[in-house]
Image (cartoon, rainbow, N blue to C red; front, top):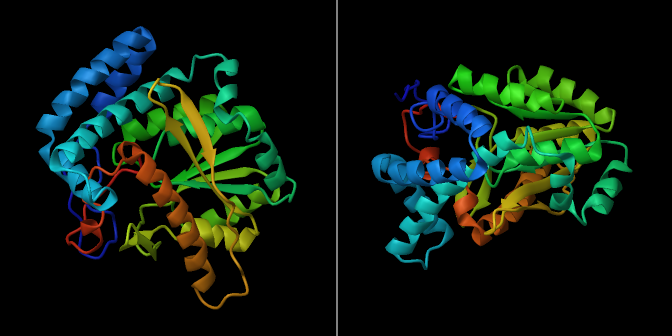
Length: 320
């Protein structure tokens, strides 16, 4: 179920891909099940199915534990495995809530960004739009919906194509329900110019930054080890003058969500070479690292994150 690529193609290794739970059959079944079943029943099925995934998908579970050793080096092996199980469940519940968001009333979303309206207005007052950047952390899909509804501004979500066309189509259709555009990474120059026009109209571009694709990468320090993040957000920020604003949607123990915004980051166009891009990307990486330390079970990397930077051959991964 894992499709191997030629060495050097630069695709992230071992991502939770179409051969795991994020394939078309399971995502489609989840979509229709959540649509028709009561909320409690969806959560109950998710609770049971993720227990099975934790035990049966040993590669993903071992990878989660390995990643958590970097994030929580003082934790015991038992605690790390508990975090791995919690990560499966958090991912399933986040998927359920993303699907359920299609039918909930608007006032359900409003408390999520309580207290952030002023910060957003300060960013938009500059007239250059904003690049919302996050990691595969928290419920990023729900975050896009909240921003679209509460800001009223156009949003383009940028990402690599899904390995499963079925999953990709489901995600595209659900985003379109809220007027959110999906932009697949193709020709980087063409994509950058397209997004620059959107930002010039004071719109929102949303991108995930903690995985790279091919040569679209830049090295950062992440939990004390080198890692490659996507260079595109900083590159687009440099071309447009728009700030990068780190953000995440964090599930609380009671099932509610709280929106978080970090400090905006600008790229200094006067810095030589890639120095400005690297400095800005590192600033985002440091803020994301702090969020992951607080809630490691919300970081959805179901492969050995740091090992993937050096191992070959590479394998195709999902954009999440």
